[in-house]
Image (cartoon, rainbow, N blue to C red; front, side, top):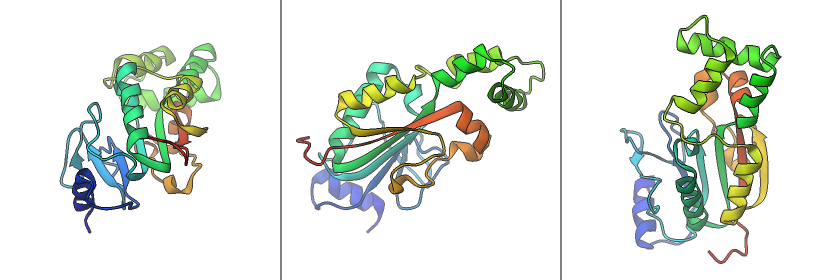
Length: 214
């Protein structure tokens, strides 16, 4: 059964539980065995607007993953998306979100000569083509380029997931994994380099409680 057919049947509530895993905002990171979706569909992904109600019945998905997506949304919209993800996950289902780290960029500003700052600045100069860029330019780009709307602190994002109902919340470095269902899913490090990605971003994984009513 194709992933698209599974999705169609789940939307109609025509099938029981299956191990369907949803990848939101996939871009070019197409994951085998996942339903890859994006606001800009492609031959290998399906269209899905994650700012609207997700087109799934309650409690039908085994896992949901989004990477470098939530920072493109205003914070109230992000919370609405997280609540929708909680709704469509089955009890015991897992959620992983990866996003730039506000703490990481604050440390870069406060310690511009530190190893992490030098590593990131070297990347940013190559990325931007501006060999005279300073760490302040790199930090400003996280706020004002790429369509970003909100850059999160770790505790802030953990609190958002907890407010939506998630438990067993676990912050991790980007490219580091907790639950095996997510092993190897991150794709941003393949674009900017694993070391740079670990400096730039962090992940949070959480579980929908097994006894959740929604």
